[in-house]
Structures are given as structure tokens and as C-alpha cells.
Length: 465
Image 1: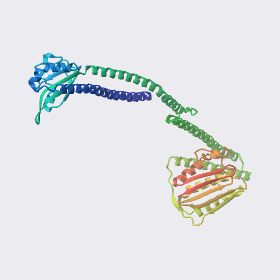
Image 2: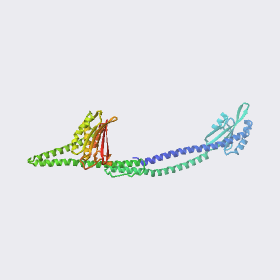
Image 3: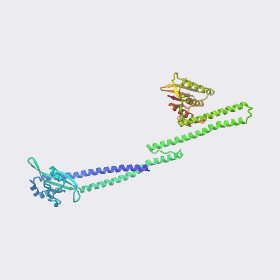
Image 4: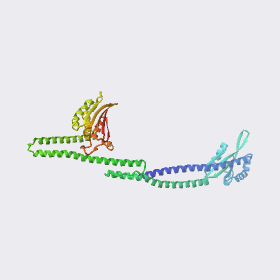
């Protein structure tokens, strides 16, 4: 597996190599154009000067006769090889290779100059030495009436070997610089990549530790970038997992307590009744009543656990029907009012007139309302008030339960709908009630919102479509 450091260094290396290569190619091209252009300019000036100065030779015979003299006069003013060529391409004089005199100048520039009657250029290699040269062939033009004739060619040839050598040295110099730059970039990239790899390794190690159950592990945030954000996210995840683990542990402890208490009571009274001679019927009835009540508590707890399991597995189905909100809430109030009266709490109902019917599962929605009212009655002191209300809100029906109870601390308010969460451990319960209610309301495509002021009371709003 390729490491992040390897990919970072490799990508930087590729970029630098491409940059150095492109820069070197451009440099070679520009240097070549500059030096070759400089040589060409000098040769052009010299050949034109030669033609203008010595164009007074009358005809081909005069040119052939005076070719050596013409060559000597030109050669003293140039470093280039000079050749005097007649209009048929035969070399009449050569400043460097006398053995070529009398041979035909089969060079592209000479042929083009004769053919087109104008100056021609050629860059190529000499067949004998394979040396690169630049040649300029300038025709000597004689005007006769309306025609123009060529009486000869003056050809200047300059070697490009020295220029090519200079260019090669400069290229090698820049290649050397490029190698130094590449090495420098490699070293810098290696160390800079460490600033990325180190926090990534820390995050990886922390994730492995968290996977093994060490939820107290935290990753330091070193930079305000994506890696830093990842570290913060991982820390938040570990904290949330730890919180949920604690909630689950508390839930198991709570469930154990909730199960143990009624079972202990049932077992105790069952043993008492079993050993009784049934002479005291009041004690007998009290024992049976306690066993019945504790059995109801166990049944309620088991039903909540079953509901939670079904909702978690998304296997709950709703029996949707049209409900009259006023009639439905009146039934709920009548069911809960006796308990409210026993606790000295006023339970009010206020429903807006002519509310439309809502489509809901009657039993599930009843479960939600009873659970909410059960919490309100549990946390509202004697002399308090609980108000059930319903009103139309745009395309929704808002059902509210508002109490004057002890309220919910601000730090706990956003957690009360979480699974297993309990605001207070002084009351019985398993922390599933509001989580189940919230899920049931969501199954109806509604939403449940909770607001509270600690010490003044709580309001639960259920929005139904």
C-alpha cells in the first residue's frame, strides 16, 4: 500500500520534473533562436555588403576570371567560409576547401538561390565532418532591359559547433540546477508531508484505540484545516459513544432495578400469602392488590421494551383512522383526571372549535399523550396546573401539554428525547418514554418539540399533519 507521504512526495516530484523539463525545452529553443539568429544576421549583412560592393563584374567570364580576387576581398571582412559560385552552380573559388573548386555546389541554399533568384538559407550538417553549419547564398543580379539575370552566387557558411557547444553547456548547467531544485523539493516535501502525516497517524491510532473500547482517547487539534476538523469530529464521536455507553449502562441498571423491585414485592407477598391461614382477609386482599399492581408495572415495562424494539427495527405498522381531536383529547383527560385529582393538580382541556379530523393510529397517539401527561403529573407538585390544548396551525394540528412543574435544566433539554436518557434518577422509569413518543409521532409524519424553563414548567408540542 502506498503511503500518503509517498504520494505527496511523488506528486511534488512529478510537478517539478515537468516544470524543469518544459523550462529547459523553452530555454534551449530561445537560446538557439537567439544565437542562430545572431549568426544569420551577421552573415546576411556581410553577404549583402559583398554583393553590393562587387556587383560590378560584367559577366560570367569576368566573375570566373576575378573569382579569387573577389573571394580575397570578402574573406578579409568575415570569419565565415566564402564560396564564389557561377550561375550554373559550379564553385569558382573557396576560402577553406580548394579541393571543391570546379565541383558543383549541390547545396539546397545554392539551388534555391539560382532557381528563385533571391537569397536562400540552409542549416544542416556537412557530409564529410557531420558538422552543423549555417549557409547564406546571395545571387549577384544583373539587370538587362526588363529581365534580370544571375551572373553568380556569393555563399557564406558559418559553423554552428561553437554555438551548439555553448547551448549544450548552458542546458547542462540548467539541468544541474534542476537536479538541485528537485533534490531540495524532495527534502522539503518529505519534511512538510510529516506535518500532515503526523496528525493523520494520531487520528488513525486514536480510531484503533476507540475501536478497542478506549473511549477516553482524544486527538489534539494541531491545525485549523481538514485534518484538524477530522480530529475534532473524531473527538466528538468518541464523546458521543462514551455518553451513549453510559446511558446504556444506566439504562441496564435502571431496568434491573425496575424489574427487581416489583418482583421482590410479588415474591414477598406470594410467600406471605402462601404461609397464611387466610384468617385475616384484609391482609389477604391487600397482598393480592399489591401483587396485581406490581404485575401491571412489570407488564407496562415489558410493553415499553417491546415497543422500543419494534420502533428500532422499523417493524411497527400503524392502524390509521380519522380522529376527532376534541373527542380524543376529552377521553385522555377523563382517563388521567382521577390521578390528577389525587395529586391535587388541576387538569385543563382547551380545544379550538371546528378543528378538522386528523389521520392517526388511535392507540399509538393515545400512548404518546398518556406518556406525556404521565411525565407532567410526575414532575408537577400539588397545587399545580396541567393544560391540554389543541389548535390549528396552517396545515397542521398542534396538540400541546403545558405544566407548571419543576421544569427541565437547560443542559438536559436537548437530550430528553434520546434513548435511555433520564433527567432525574429520583423517579422510576427507564428513559425510553419520550424516545418512543418521538418515534411514534415521526411515523405519523409529525414532529414533537419540547420547551422548558427550569423551576417554572415544561411544554410539549405535538404537530400532526
